[in-house]
Image (tube, rainbow, N blue to C red; front, side):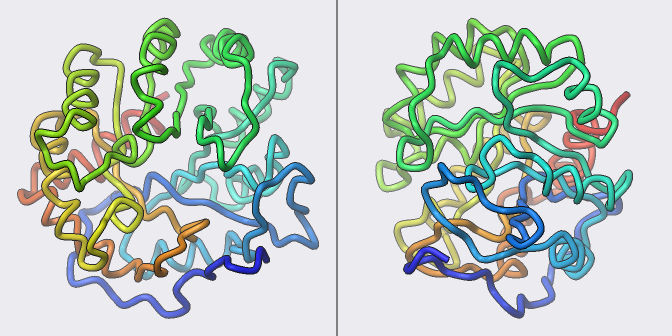
Length: 290
């Protein structure tokens, strides 16, 4: 492991909140195990192993029915660990891959059969090397015929520059972790309002109301993040997703308890209808509709 890497919580509590039947953890990862699925040579960090068996056990412990497993940068464009987890999970998981512009149609079809339904574009410079945007555009052209979408990960200072490019792709775009909004600036802050305007103006844009542990200035129980997630759930009820982000790669301040994170859900989605949209209807429409 990278010297300052924090391993995931060894014993998360059983959440007080019971997710509705069919609920989906729509953002999580598998790492390694490294002796079976080595990490990419170009990686910016080396995580602790976080196996499919551990992920599925957490899914059951928290009361979720399904997972959306997202390829992370430490595995680069080698999606073997992801595909192995998807094939083991059967219909209980879908995946988001990371691919290059040279990916073949046959490879994409094989991924689709395993459960992949989109690709992730990472614009966070501390995690990945810079990629020309035409590379991303070429990938979009290849995945559109499959009905896939893209997941984008960026930091708030990059949003303004990225928006024209993302809009031009004409594909469903899911933004990770509320665009990593700076919650210290408040709901009326320019960063968040620019983000809200993007969602208002483009109904093909979705967002994950996840990772309060990454966005919080105050730390647990993440009270400073809840108003932002609640706002997005309230105003864009059919275009929001939620996930644990297990095993929480590159958390520096602390390692969250996934049971406590699950207990944040009724604070951001207070009604049964909002919870069902967030956890069941929205992810199923995006990942399990054929």
